[in-house]
Image (cartoon, rainbow, N blue to C red; front, side, top):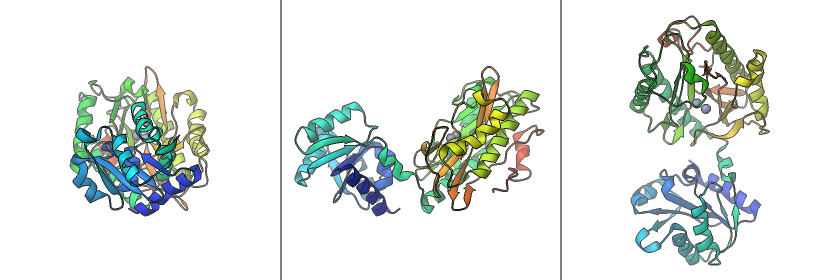
Length: 384
Ligand code: ZN
Ligand code: ZN
């Protein structure tokens, strides 16, 4: 990873905002800018000249190994007081002064300690909230990052196949979830990229349903949304499956969602704005009479965080560019009835998009998701 280029991005923001330094506290941004993977227990300070990682003894050896560019500052809780006091002492030694930026996601307690020890002491002339500006540095993925996300997606694909072929009526959502997560770990996932969703029957009406002890039954839609993490990078995929035969209404909403998904995946490309990508799928669902039942955005960026920029949503003016990596995930949710969603990951290229991986989709008429593997990828889009 080219940390020099990434730090140059921070320094450009500092120059534009009239800042002489900033504290990076978002763990994903710390990892992106320094390589340090246990970011919740660290702060990164960046100025035009300096780059320093503040962490404690538990992570010292790890920081030495992972951070090629950052100077390391050890925080000792028994002598240093709080983290801000420790950083203030180091900044004093460096003769640093100026306007200091901080990320909008910090909690008030930390803001107060920065104000007390770095601003009131006179080191920082002004404190400026950067909101989520540093997150935007991660919006375009390098080839190396795409390769890691591709592997995370492949891990999830392998786990999906190993698990779904054994899906049976009577097993609970939580039992299926446990087997899927176990298989993701076996395949090389360090953790799940978010809490796995297994939403069967009426539970499918909740887009972020989680899992319950409800037993999966024949003839109902089962939405499974899951992701693996490989070397810090996330994947995100949803498949909706069923056992036995579907009633007409369930088959219809699945068909509509699948068509919306396929069209958006086929047409998403650089040059569109976020809202235009969203509209491709939304129009298909609205034309079928389910406009109100597609209650979330079409997709989101994925990287070190499972939800990051760009958003493919109704109001997004973000211009899509090569190197952005997005999900395409339309859904229909009908309270009291059920719902479904189909989701894949695509990286935008100069000419269009490249779907990272795609587990096959269950086809209407098939009575078990295992049947979907018979013909390899059956997307009909020849994306694999
Ligand atoms: Zn998902
Ligand atoms: Zn998603």
